[in-house]
Amino acid sequence: DDFVINGQKIWTSTADRADMCFLLVRTEPDAPKHKGISYVLVPMDTAGIEVQPLRTMSGNLGENSFNQVFFTDVRVPKTNVVAGRGLGWTVANTTLKHERNSLNANPEGTLLKVRDLMQRETINGVAAIESPIYRDRLMKLQARALTMKTHGMRMLTCSLKGESPGVAGLVSKLQNCQINFDMATLALDVLGELGVLYEHTKYERARAYWQTHSMFSLGLIIGGGTAQIQKNIISERGLGMPREPKPAQGK
Ligand SMILES: Cc1cc2nc3c(=O)[nH]c(=O)nc-3n(C[C@H](O)[C@H](O)[C@H](O)COP(=O)(O)OP(=O)(O)OC[C@H]3O[C@@H](n4cnc5c(N)ncnc54)[C@H](O)[C@@H]3O)c2cc1C
Image (cartoon, rainbow, N blue to C red; front, side, top):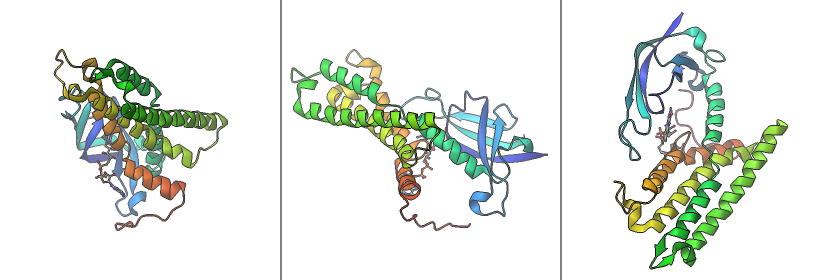
């Protein structure tokens, strides 16, 4: 009546706080690759689950809730399978679609923060916002951020009408995560040598917000599917371009 699950998973956000997790487990070893996986719900207090916090470049051990999780003879009732055995890949793609939408923070708020920073910080005695080079970078980011704001409204309209946004829906995570990182990069450039301070010294700005935001937003370009994978999905599923070769097809 139960599955017995063994394995490990690294990079599991908030596993140390979670009550439940979902696992993609191979339950049909003889089925073709994508048809042999099931999507199983597992309470985190099940015997055999061990959560180990990770130290990362944006936080000390346990600080940013990033973990690796080990599963040793974890017993899960077969009734915990979502949708049906072997249908895990389809369910996972739906979950990923929602995850990517949730990672797609609108960058307009960050843009205003960069603008405020550029009004406050000076370079050679002049406010950074007066520098043609930095202002040009800010304007380009503003154009991209406002484009994505309008794009977000288009997505909302689609959703309210119950329509599928098609390829337009695939663009949001790719673009917004990159814009957020590019804004943090501009902020760090404006801060110059102050942008490398971390230890809460008197010269540090906003308790190292931009330093942390830069690394966190870089992580979000990877988390939930990397930018390169997003581009593959857009070209193959969205634009109908030829699929990339799959050397392991059918295995
Ligand atoms: C902040 C953050 C939070 C995360 N949270 C979670 C979580 O909660 N749960 C969870 O399960 N995982 C989580 N992850 C893991 C994340 O989903 C993976 O790191 C991500 O999907 C990339 O997979 P990978 O690390 O195996 O990289 P790989 O697949 O090994 O990729 C390595 C590099 O090769 C490139 N690449 C790979 N395949 C192709 C291809 N076909 N074409 C072109 N380029 C390719 C990638 O773009 C990347 O640059 C998180 C990661 C981060 C950074």
